[in-house]
Image (tube, rainbow, N blue to C red):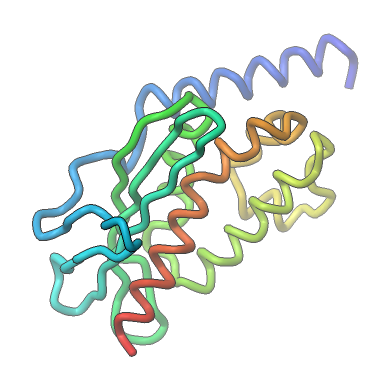
Length: 179
């Protein structure tokens, strides 16, 4: 690709990130019956659906002030599936866009599929701008590939990963509550 092509690609990535942050998917009011995390890290969470276990996780990036609470409802039946995901928070366009694209990728997926996407996104973020050399991962990540450029900047990687960490933690809590 020519230098001009790289600039055009970078601009397209920036436009996708800005659009996803301006029109975030999954952002909304947390369901009734959900209280925020307490000082001891625990939360009171109830599911909107009887066949689901719910949990949430509050994540904060002290470097830039981004914060998010991710709420998931996981089906109790095997394979455990993400029946609902909603988040609320504030932050830079990178954190907000990453959350929006994450919701599109994981809603309706099984926990195992969501964890695979979590790991693939982490691989992308560790690439230092090189991206991933695996067509299957590229296909899996879909629009999340726009964060390849973000992976060049270590301070911005935390912004992109904030919601993903909340997803992982809230899924683990929901599954643990079913034990």
